[in-house]
Length: 292
Image (cartoon, rainbow, N blue to C red; front, side, top):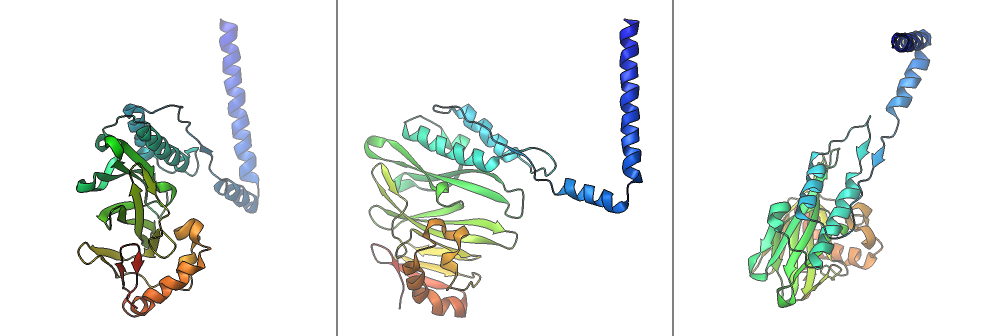
């Protein structure tokens, strides 16, 4: 036993000497070497780990636990981070799949209810996480409605656009307008108007609500929709160049190659947009059109 303790003491002593020698050698190096070493450490990319979600329908307890993980995440540049983008994307997909397989959840207790349309039995929930940067909180919207035979249906809107939807309006029999906002950076936020079509158990997220696109996405403005006149007002927004705005990949994704909408939308709104930082569109029963 005494021999064993002696060996341990010698090992600890040797490790201390090695550490001290290493520090002394480092301190003897030129300043340029030390600065370069520090820069290399600072420029190292943080490690990201994915959380695997088990197969099958999720229980409410599992969903609550994953959402708590997302909310509690804080970006740490010098440590291993959870890949919260991957977790939120997979979790929202899995929740939607479970709802559509008729897994029963008390959704208002496990997700955040953002807006609803009681008469149509439509609700928009969300989950999310902080970006770790100037964008702030990132929302993953999920829309839920009642289909045929009181079947509960869901669709993951976050696969198309990430925002907090604050309003939902009925446009026509199967058409609905969603209005939402999302921080884009510390300098501003996105302003989104999105037309969807719901028929029984199906949701069409690619309906041509604005020429050949389902949504428009401007910056730092506010929408107001009049349910009687069916007029959509946009005010107080930042004035982007209309020759470019409809081609921004971060706002329009797969629709950036759609030049038809870009040209027609510019003609609809450019006069008021440049002069007053606002525009008006009217729903004609099928889509939104200009007043020109």
